[in-house]
Image (cartoon, rainbow, N blue to C red; front, side, top):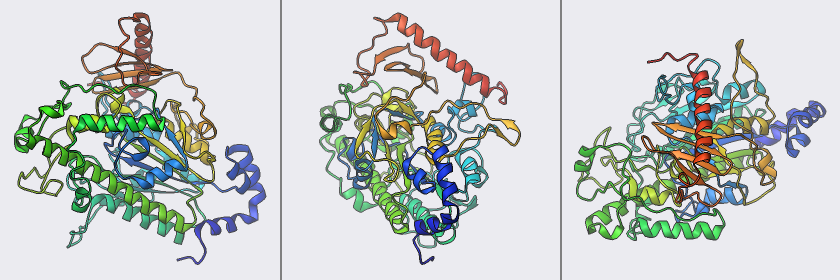
Length: 547
């Protein structure tokens, strides 16, 4: 291990050309720190999986998330940040700056693409553009993007391909090679393994690459189903949710109002809206405690209330443990002397999930809930609570499916502490934001092939003040669910349904459908949605054969 802290070594090695670095930074890098030191920041993007908008303490939740809460208190909380409503399109959009459909990572009508779609040669991810500027690139956790990780520009990777059992490393890959599980996996837990790998990468970085900045993509699979968590973490929340999802939604919303987080009403529960996919056999396997609709809590049997409360307790335990592990990651940054000069983002890939299914190794009804032999999903009741105050869930493009916390923390580059940012923003904005923050200009070609313009916008102007990022639209399409946001107007429809129109300045709960009162606005926004569909399809179909 080097005897000097990482950040000091980097500064020492820059002394011989400090004047040139300062001049270059003043010309291309927008932050005061970089202009003064000529040192590019490190970047860590932390992504949760199936976490609801209100699950964190700093967004109104009761789950213990002190480490993320501290990051939020020392940085920024975006209140209108969006994902794509699903795992794989969010990841492709986040790391590329394009709508997933543009790069074949979500399906378009009449075209290929989707979860198994392959990106075009020009559709590179962040590491390929950061590497020429001295960045080392690390990946720890879920991948769910086409191709191998190292081929996408990462120097090291832990790919958690086994997403059906949190208690074994079997099926995972490290540096694109199969992991050999330890003989004794009694202490193995996937969320901990993600940060074990991340810390190991950072320790090696400090030891061998102390003069280089790094980009680290940390992608947890928690709290995605199956609901698996260490028993001690579950015990912490065992009885907390016997109050029911109705009461929990009210409590979380009250905290959000007290925090000044949102200016909206609380959406109504939709007792007729269940999981997005029907798996009747799963309901039978899970037994009489399972409920596939968000019915009034008082309508449930005692057995159902206990079963549902236990599932929410496991979900809470998974979020709690993720926060604990993020705390270890932060401590590693501090030990390296890199905490202040690391730009940290945190978000979720979609809203909480209403899905109920049994797959992989199946479900043993006699097994302890949350153990490896169990296979439980959160379901629509407590998913509605996790997504407070919004409607719907993962896969839908109503606010509950696409809204996520976004925490941005960077002591050396962001002076504001604990402030809200109201500007609408999207995962397509992350790549251009990182480029702007670190002073990297994305090239116009890749190996001689032109790189098309990307729709994402830099959020760096919002780092200093609560400004609205200038953009024309935000657009969604996933499995027939579709939406567009223009300013505060949102047009949205579930698969097969008619358009609904909402004024999000006062109604992010999507409670007051204005479509019948304002048919011209519906027509205007529907035209814009279709124009964007045409533009997205035009780019995608250049290299996708029609079915």
